[in-house]
Image (cartoon, rainbow over all chains, first blue to last red; front, side, top):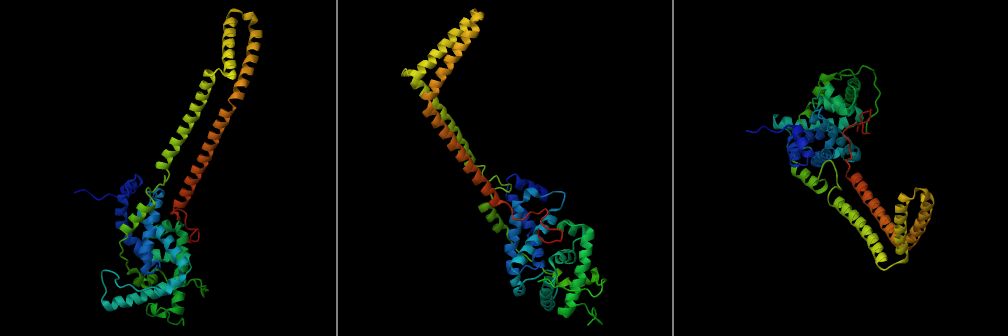
Length: 194
Length: 188
């Protein structure tokens, strides 16, 4: 049985003119891109547009891909940029996000899931109150679960800068939650602060 | 929309564990889309090749063909005009032929008469210049035609270059994956 082509092989194929290889890359990474965009605050009804836009940009600039980095890192970078651009251009839609019908696989009961949706919506609102340069590292680190090094690679910033931004982002998020979304706080988090 | 808040204390970071817990619901969100056909259709419609070379096909071939055709046409026109002039006993052509014959005779003579070479050479040169002037005078329309063809070719070349550049700019990716973020993490 033939093994699946690697990302680099597919990239080289596409650059050589065999564009069919790009369809494999899209299938391989579309969930990652769509999920990252969703977590960056793109409304679900616009995820498909943003995802296809990201892949189109990837295709157009594929010759700039540096194989020394993982393709997923590069995809994250383009996705973050696209999400920030999108958010900037459509801020007024931020509060109208429809909470998805089908959320995740794997888990919670219907009741838990509904609670999660509500919490996710409130969290998105809270995150939108953060400055962009704090929001991106926070989401990449604590939502996407990437390492400090990966976040630095994606945002093209030194790890020290990422650390300090995460520090401030968490502090700011805590303050936002304390003021506006106390229900989101872990139990007892603000005792004595009010 | 970002909120400007003052930290009451500089050490307010609740820590990674707190962030992981708070952002848990967001982490459980997933989006499952299939944009493969959408992307591939868009690629097929707008970008045949990822690297560009949007003008490398038919247009380039047509430009080369037109340039070669123009060049051969100009050459054929020049040779044809000269041939007609010689065949019809045109004065300028006769002068040119005479000039060539004289030059030839002088050249032969020069081989045998090295002493008279300088004077003969001057005479031949003067005759040559006179004949050439006559030839140029007669061939002025041809020269003008050739110049016009060359100018037309130049204009066409400029036009083709403009189209290539315009197309390249239009199809260039809007977002650079390298350095697209400024040092604050926002878009550059």
